[in-house]
Length: 478
Image (tube, helix red, strand yellow):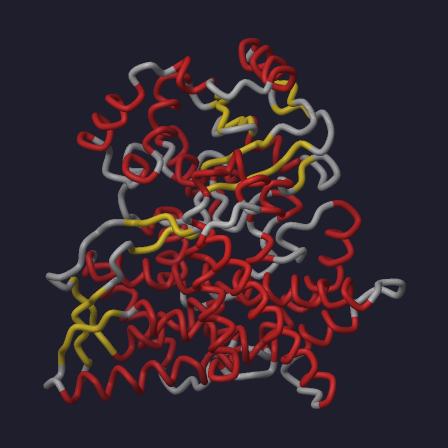
């Protein structure tokens, strides 16, 4: 711990750029070894350097990339302390606000301080449980479109065919967030979602330049030009939706009401537009991408674990019987489906890293963290920690959640799929409700098995997703 403190002070003072090469002279050779002989999880292929450094230096270490110093933390006590820090002590890193501004604007995801508190006060109530109850029919309506499309495709193929499920589940989730929060169907917001997806891909490709992000975004590269163009196009499309909303109030767009009406007095026209666009971007992207990716991984895991698929299907058939739409009471009865979702979020958390910046000097465990230090928590390392989860931590075992998260691992704060502390995701209630409805309906209609063409290669594109898509053999049930 003392060494970490000394290194933090040294880097804060000198900002050295060759820290990694000095410490790891045989870095490339060791990375190749890890990639060849890696573990059963995808850390060894996506983040081999994190795995190597943890094995070498333990659960707390410091590294530098460009001009940024990163304190990676996976020690249980320090993770617990992060959850106890106030938003004025730990906030979102400033470099993320810059490098991902095109994707999230200045919305809730990247805001800090009083602006974050104000935005959360406006938006969070729209995701309370009583509001989710009113969204269940909208989720059902969006799910029906997928059910009908798959039924038609399978019937024409004789009862079973390969379906690449990714785009269907992304469109479904996008439809839900558009209907529930913005009063429009996916068809109306299709262009926005498509361009946000392109932005996601373009921005994720620049993550390797995290330390240079302040400079890199100003260079006249083809990627930067594409990002600027897409950013402006998305901005105009969102402002069109907001303008239509002002003239045609929609009973299902209370979130858009809150955002539009939440523009503070004293903001000029550009600032008001920035407020609306930033928060709509956050909801458009965050509200559908993470949920869709989780649904994709759920189907992959169920297809490769047929016993659990049968157990989840039996429960879904029993709960779904004569219930249209599924109500809150029905969702509570989906115990096995819930366990499957929780275990999927453990093994494949959509956001791989939880990033914070010390907005003031803070103390985490025995380490004094100077202001300006980036604190990075690798979710997957927490979720696969065998000291917390047991020797079967890298296995798909939904029954570990049979008695809730508190009983699933030794420390509940080692399970952070929706974040940790005051900045925990406000949309988790909607995400869980949507996932339960979608899985229950799909399992009631279809059986899933792996396709021979599936290549298991999780890829980092801001979220963790199947690198080559998820083709499944889908059979319609009698």
